[in-house]
Image 1: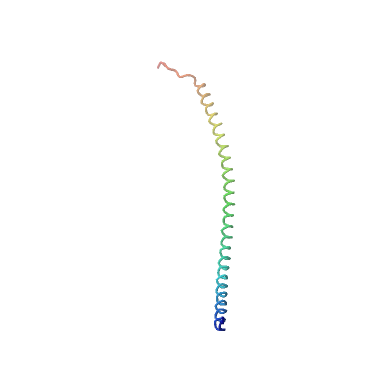
Image 2: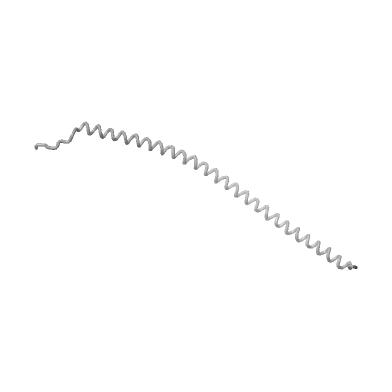
Length: 102
């Protein structure tokens, strides 16, 4: 089978054109992927910042909970002391007089 030189030249030209187009498309995809990688890195950095803030908030919440526990225990103790004071005052006042002459 005989193939003319024009057909061989046309096939080579089409092959070269396809390689050039695919090379350009590959370059565009590489450029886009670099941009996406940079954005993902920025998002990752933001997530790290958010994680650090959440950790700080957790420590602050733990401290506040500790303070609330101390305040509750002090209030319980104070309530007990108030009851004792009421009892002492009631003992000082004595029983109520029921029948009084005017």
